Length: 242
Image (cartoon, rainbow, N blue to C red; front, side, top):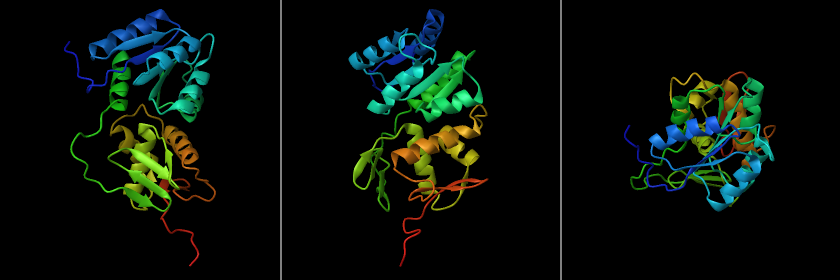
């Protein structure tokens, strides 16, 4: 199989799992895609590896010795927006929502298809369009989104979003106040026809997006819930008194 170009990103993909067979399987498929792969078999080693050789993406089991996977995920999210794909035998809908609420970008339950895992990783690592910048920053009250540089500020302070959070925010802003259903938001993030994505994952990502934007869902400045339907962007002057 021919290797696929990784777009010049020399950072590795870190695979964290205490099962050597899983690590070997995932490494084999990722190396066929042209990725450099590093591995850790417990949470403590994973954190040390990330400090020494920062990864482009982390494939993370949750049931790890030394330091559990949720603690590793929280540590990553305190530091940056490195994409994280949880790969876990804890595969109930509740488990998936918990992992996404803690900051995972995607959640793959075991047993899993290695080809599907590679597809999800490929989409998370998709590089921005290299063409010259053509978009003006979106100014939405105190929120400013620079689509081309993938930068967000609120009240002048930078906000670091994951790729999925950024795509959700852009989809809502581009809708210009129209309500988007969860299916429409899933399409915006993942593309059509991906039935394996749960509706509730949108709620989990929106919850994290609001937290990062310091947006109170009971008095939203940026993202409003339309009960039973989906979400919409709050108009910049909505709720202001004349």
